[in-house]
Length: 88
Ligand SMILES: [Zn+2]
Image 1: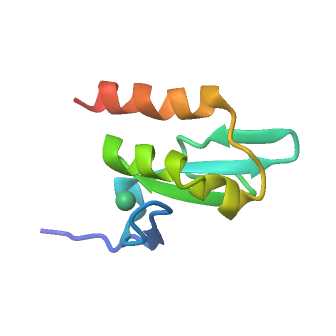
Image 2 (image 1 turned 90 degrees about the vertical axis):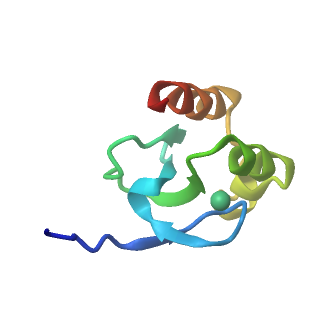
């Protein structure tokens, strides 16, 4: 069995490190913040676990705002919740 070592990233909500495919990435681009599904967008990234509890906590603590230094648009957050539904 081949196990591929993925880089670890920190969830902004629970502050634990996970392989990045266990996390959602949102990224700050020149024209605003977007959900980066490909993990490839250039820019300042922020990560959160793929579970509702962590996304909720990140919003409550304004963890994204702090890590990206600007407010995250509601539609980006809605995107994350939508992805959670799709993962099921
Ligand atoms: Zn988390």
